[in-house]
Image (cartoon, rainbow, N blue to C red; front, side, top):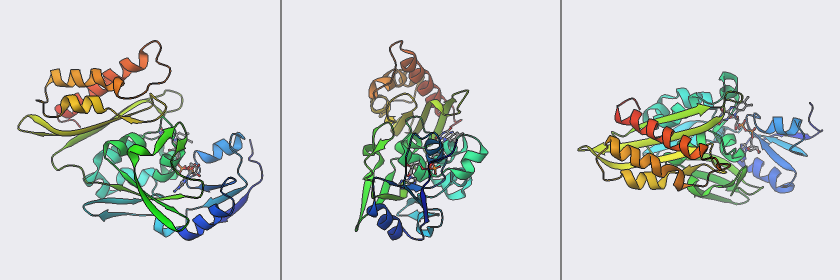
Length: 284
Ligand SMILES: Cc1cc2nc3c(=O)[nH]c(=O)nc-3n(C[C@H](O)[C@H](O)[C@H](O)COP(=O)(O)OP(=O)(O)OC[C@H]3O[C@@H](n4cnc5c(N)ncnc54)[C@H](O)[C@@H]3O)c2cc1C
């Protein structure tokens, strides 16, 4: 399959990206790793008159310390996230999730910004970044705004990003010292995308859960926090009973898709229980 003809431009700074988007927002698209957009164009599911390549925009690249956390350029590839020492130290959950995306070829091309903006309801990184309480830095015509990832995903493949905006960076707070985390994924045997993905971190002090965040992907129209599970755990002894109760509450925290037979609710319970169990046993 071939794409329809399109105009191609390579941007050299963020301002240029915004300017070109602004010229014709409805028919212009940013291309990052191209691993989600190009297949759509080849299948003629997306029609784009102009592509703006952001691979040479230095401002969108690199990982650096930011107010005790990390500022990750939107054009950071999955493979880099998986192996970067600063990410592995400050946000190991993100490195773990990046390491199990697709295969090596996908990880060498795909970017964190592309994954978030594409908003595939079964993508891996959104769950890890929701659990890590990430914030997005978004540039538009004459403005820069920050948005919590909690509010970003509206529906499958739809976010709050306007057609003339570009995601420039993702700010990830450093994980609470002493907290343990895990990313647990059941990959679809054909696509490798998660049938379910659970991202969790738990901080325990004196045997009790001081704080925790749990997020799920793959089972609903958008990734979501398992807020009810977090409530069950917080302040409780991190016991087998508390984990079982938290796991039972996970599915009720969000909207599941196609769950008439209860399979996804069950999957949710089992995978949240396994993820928390791994953390409790120190395997996280
Ligand atoms: C075979 C295969 C297997 C895969 N398996 C998995 C998997 O297991 N788990 C998983 O999570 N993903 C998987 N993916 C998807 C992969 O991670 C993609 O790379 C990712 O979803 C999109 O990133 P990209 O950089 O390729 O974005 P692109 O395809 O370039 O862009 C995707 C969308 O985001 C927009 N965009 C990109 N960057 C920006 C930006 N900075 N600001 C605003 N808009 C932007 C584009 O305009 C486009 O609409 C797979 C892909 C393939 C082809």
